[in-house]
Image (cartoon, rainbow over all chains, first blue to last red; front, top):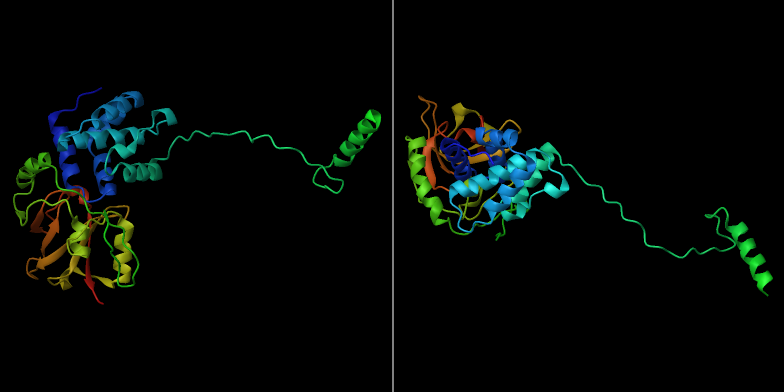
Length: 148
Length: 151
């Protein structure tokens, strides 16, 4: 993980302290050099690992909190895949920022297709929705006549 | 936690009351005086309300979504006015390029000679500041609009 210079950290902390809304925090950080460095010089895996590490700290100074938000924003700007997607709920404004980033940067979605549960096929003589219904009924009748 | 907050048309305004300001944040606020030496700190930091909460909700809560500000502007008949016509009691809203209201404050003093209003506003986690209208953190946005309530 790239170490940010103290001046860049100070810039992030100032934005964090002075932001009035989640959107302004996201936009302010997106314009900062620090988030630009994180986006360009760190992989998604590195950012995720660092985000998970920094958000576990209980008593967060403005530096730590700002860095957590910056990492979240840098990671979301890279459109992470499902397995690299961070948990935004770790931060107070995380969900709002994730929503803003998704609206403006999009998200790599994983499409999950679930198979339907097996259902019994009900065939009645008047069932027109099943084109082969009459043939199937005839086959069933023929088989049952053979049994009897 | 939220409080019941509505426009004059009784439309709800989403809001949020934060817990106390963390002690570690408080040490940081002294640095702000170096960044904005001409801004006068009026109150101690408070996490209970933000700038929009000061301007539109009497300092009782935080209003975080810019769409709520548009709703208040419409429902409460805040009409945009020119800089030359502003008076104490009018408000200023700072917008960014995409039209989000990032900051707001109340005009407390204005001289038609200098055309630079003095504003009272709350800066993020920090306290309330008295500042010239253009003496704010840059990321609040380049667009300033002035409004007067005409209810």
